[in-house]
Image (tube, rainbow, N blue to C red):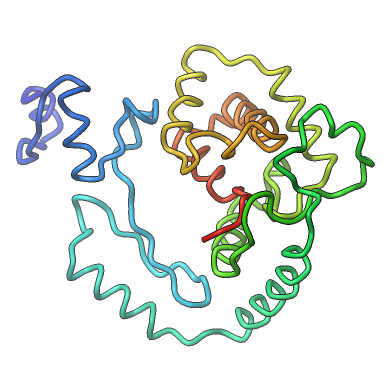
Length: 241
């Protein structure tokens, strides 16, 4: 390890050596995302992103470089001081209208199996929350997060309004795409990192569809485990906070 660091002029860096079992409590305590968990040696630690009330990205802080209490407090104060833009106000108003509509819909169901998608009109939509009532603040966060993937047609723009045609396509990926061992490791890493420990909270149509989505994104776009987990979290259609 010292020879490796010396060759990169980085001898001032502290380090620990141990087995994965020995290191996991350390990673957990210091919020380190390890290559053993993600399958990606280029991803080490989760960062902290600060947004203002309009959803505008203010800063990113990283462990162990600049994620310190003083820096975090400074950036949060900066974010809170930003005025809510007129455009953001219009966006929030539009999201309130969508929320009011979608929160009353119930075509997205835990009982809907993937094989049942063929019995629904191809131009239909799977709308609403499948488990608990939708939460507006969470809905706003999900919609803002999904904007980053607006150009990826296999990622829905709204987790509570999924076209049946997209659901069918993603489900077909689950059946037809086979992962290599390294790709399977990335998928398994996403399962460990995601909030639901999988594509959804239960084995409904969403589980199969977003399993297929992950297979596609891993094999065709080389998405890493942490990115797949992040997308799954944004796509969560179970409602709640």
